[in-house]
Length: 398
Image 1 (spheres, rainbow, N blue to C red):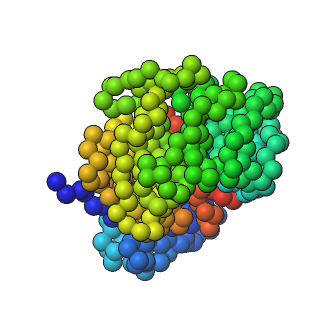
Image 2: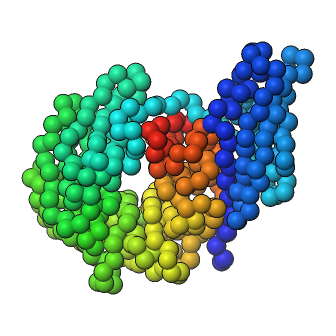
Image 3: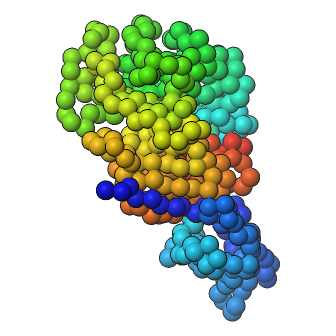
């Protein structure tokens, strides 16, 4: 059976479009406009939306190739661009947003599983934890990285943070007091990704040195180094841990391993290859060779038996039970910089240009408005909320 192939357009819309509408609604001004653009397969249309009053109603009139209406919810827009064959897409503003005071530039972020805290890392080793609910009243700087932070993750408890950077260090931090009880050393080049296993007694780190390392946090012991299946110089760029879809489990090789018996490790490499390993036995279970050149994997997520892979402007969904061809290929007009799945049929994309997009059941669910020229650097799914972060220091909840 041939895989599905879906082309997803992207939009860019003035972040303050709701303010424009509100000003006209309140009578502050009689008429205004906001900009909007649509991108599909190398083509683009750029226009504006006039906003004015007609009696007691506010009217939106798309110009230069756009048809725009207020959606079912007053804060959403329903947009069509006939020239690019795009119709009735929903654009949503954020439910809430956070302005990060430090660092000013965000390289990585995470939201605690409980949705109470966020952590951000910057280009000069800056790392900070802040509270979400009281607009950052609680903020703690974590000092210790010597250069750019590449990844920061909360443990499932929400009380501990794991971070890594270009200084080859992996650090554990207390969210409560900012202390750094453990630093894991062993990589020879910058760390590119981190992953948790279960509750986090074991963690994984990927590095430009070509290895993925398995650690025990309590003692700081290095348990194992994974190399790529071909045993040639490749850089692991992204990884994800998931439960085995076949229900098979095997006794772990080390007494320092916890919750690895029924887990899979999926690694994406800089040449586009994917390796799938048993975390307990360390054996390679499967590999997906790249079908194209110059298709470095930027992001991987695994939910149930589905692998979500971002390679440049194309993303693929694979079934772990059948790795011959992808189930679906999703093409976007901009490279994907973040991917996060909440179920086997729902995935959110952050892209270099345009508004982020939430994709469900083989079609676009909605676009996440509110980002200006700042590059969106990532996305996190948390319960019923999706968070996107911009490089300029903004985190928005949808």
